[in-house]
Length: 386
Image 1 (cartoon, one colour):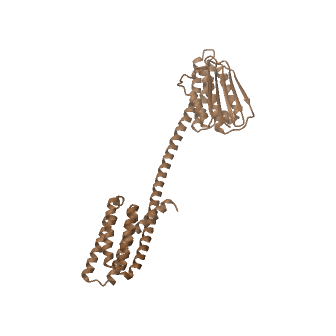
Image 2: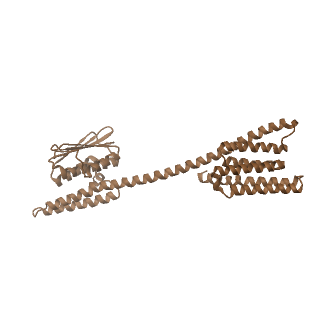
Image 3: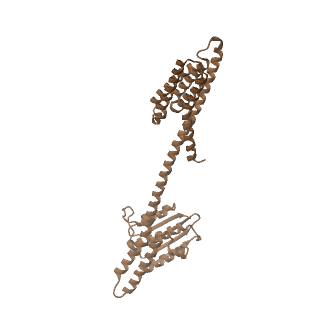
C-alpha cells in the first residue's frame, strides 16, 4: 500500500475516532431514557447535561480544528469533558461508557503528563460511577481492585494511542522533509546538469569553432597574390571542418577523427593537419599497448591535444612539437611538449584553454599538469584513468 493510500485510511480512521464520542453519548442517552428510574425533573436535568456535552465537544473540538494545536485551549476543553463526565456519570451508571470520549480526546490533544492525569482521573470517575459513588466497607475491596484495573488499562491504552498518533505525525514530518530534500536534490541535479552542459558546449566551441575561425583569419590575413588560392582553399576547408564540428557539438557526437580511427591514429591525423597548417613539425610517439577505452576518455584526450596545439600556434612560436600517448596499467597519459617561448605559470591568464583542458580531465577523475619556463618551452601532461 502506497503512502497516499495510507494517508487516506489515516484520515478516515481519524474521522471515525472523532465521531465515536457523539455516538457513545447518543447510545448511552437512549439506554438511560429506556431504563432509568429517575423522576421527570431529574431526567430533564440529565438531558440538559447531555446537551451541554454535545455543545462542548462541537464548539471546542469539531468546529475549531485549529484549536487542537493550542495546548492551553485543549487543557480547558479536556478539563470541561472531565467535569461533564463527572456530573453525568455520577448521576446514572449508564453513562459510564462516556469515559471513552475523554480517553480519545486526552490522547490526541494533551501532552503526556497531563494526558495521564486526565486519563487516571476519568478512570477513577468511571469506577465511582459503576459503584454509584464510594462504596460501603464490604464492597471497598472490589472497588479498589477495579479502580486499579481501570486506571492501569485506561493509562496503557491511552498511551498506546498517543504513541501511535505521534509516530504517524513524525512519519509525516519525515516524509515531507524527504520529499522536500528529494525535490531540492532534483533541482540541484538539474542545475548541475545545465551547468555541465554549458561547460561542455563552451569547451567544444573553444576547441573547435574558435580554433577553426582563428585558422581562417590567419590564412586570409597571410594571403598574397602568389598564394591566395591555396590560402582560400585552406580557409574553406577550415570553415567546413568548423561547421561539421558545430553540428557534432550540438548533438554531443564524437570528433570525426575518432569515428574513423583509434585514438593513436586520430592523434596522428590531428597532428599532421596542424603541422601542415602551421608549418611546424610534430612527432607522435606511442608507448605501451594501445587498447580501446571509454569514448569519453578518448574524446577528452583528443580535445586536450587539439587545445594544446592551438595554444602552441597562438603563443609559443615553437619550432618543434612532440606528442606522447602512454598506455599504462590503470591510467593513460598524454604529454604535449614544445620548444617555444614558454610562459610564467605564476602570472594569471585570462584565456580559456587551460581551464577547458582541466575541466575535461577532471570530469573523468583525472589530472592536468603544466610545466613551463620562459624561453624553455612548455610541457602539458593529461592523466586519466583507463
